[in-house]
Length: 290
Ligand code: G1P
Image (cartoon, rainbow, N blue to C red):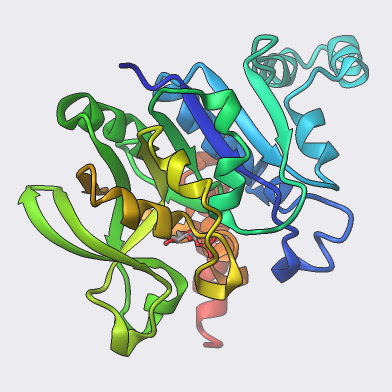
């Protein structure tokens, strides 16, 4: 069965970016000139996703407006003959009905956010993208995962090795290598202390899940941090179905973290021919003061 739907949990308050996020959704923070969320949405469409489910919360209006038409801007750009920009903002608006919004009424955790999309997703495998995890790669991660899913016919999460002292930030795996870039997961634990972690192989925010996951998310059992965790539901799913990890190729930036967000901006800006040279010159200049 084809992966047609992707769930984006975007209800988080973004407290780590206060004051920037006091009146603005954290997903709208720009990396170079594009909001973080747009990178993930483009990745989903490029992977063949036909419908996007945003699980939002209060204060996310800008997100809805971003993927809607703006007649005022379109009119101004047209008047000024800025056809390139006009095309860009028109292309940004998906066909009517492609984006569905639902709300997570209480901040009960990632697992609960996904569960909120249950009735929209229905009885089919679906993708989950955590927009905070921005990945720079020439092999877009979700597209690769869709290919792997077509072959393995089982749930799959993107994974990467993290520093051993950072395990308490991630879902951590006990897994065995089965192919060049695929591991089969035996067990998983959400945010273990480094001493308790079964490895340093961490889940990164791209998943393809079978709908069976909703049975376990529906139990609403609280886990790490008192939240309903996706990792815990996946751990239970493991008893019934295999789950694989895809060791993606590329650089991952944690845009939910201030340093990670700055690094993402630098890395993506260096890819732009019109700003690259200026930036390199500046970095070389300031390096003398390090
Ligand atoms: C979430 C997941 C965690 C995963 C991480 C990847 O944690 O719960 O298992 O490793 O995303 O970014 P969060 O970053 O929301 O705390």
